[in-house]
Length: 279
Ligand SMILES: [Zn+2]
Image (cartoon, rainbow, N blue to C red; front, side, top):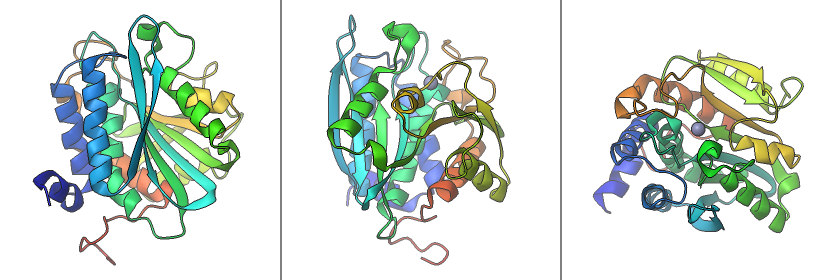
């Protein structure tokens, strides 16, 4: 087994998430359509594959900026039930986007071994590292990677199967988080389920209704009629600035968010084959 694959199955998920996010941020800015956006996504894809997930790509144009893609990692499960965890891999050009959103991609990487270890027959789960989310850079009204994801869901006839889709966007800092969605109030199996998981894990998460149609990848899925939401920090003074660097990331925040998502998504708390509690 390669050293990286060994590490992926033995280190704690939050530590893996933190380390991956730091390393992604250290490589520099990842604007939509850039070589570094692609390199970051390919690194995530390699980790998804090492965890045992099946990886495929949806490629799409970013007008004026070349081409981007989504990395879609699938853990098979019951076909009538689909969970989607997504995080955008691109950043604004001004900075390396450590919190926005190397943190979310890192969390997907940290969770991958747990998703791969989910007991049968769980819901099918997709981990999606989207491209071209930053609308201030792409100049498009929609989040292009999320739109490509909606096209995949429609093409495969899966839109009705989506029980929830959660965008992890700026999850690597601070002790409190906001959960955004365009719903009129928290739905029991969607937003409220995240809030309950957070309470059980003693992590402060507050639900807030999106102003307008939403500012992350969840927007496109919600507009297409699927239950979708976004989890992220309450404030981010370095958003879209050069100071959004690796030093912004805090291991404690990754630990908090990991606990909440693991409980919410019903994932095992340890990877397959590791000697964790009950494992
Ligand atoms: Zn973001």
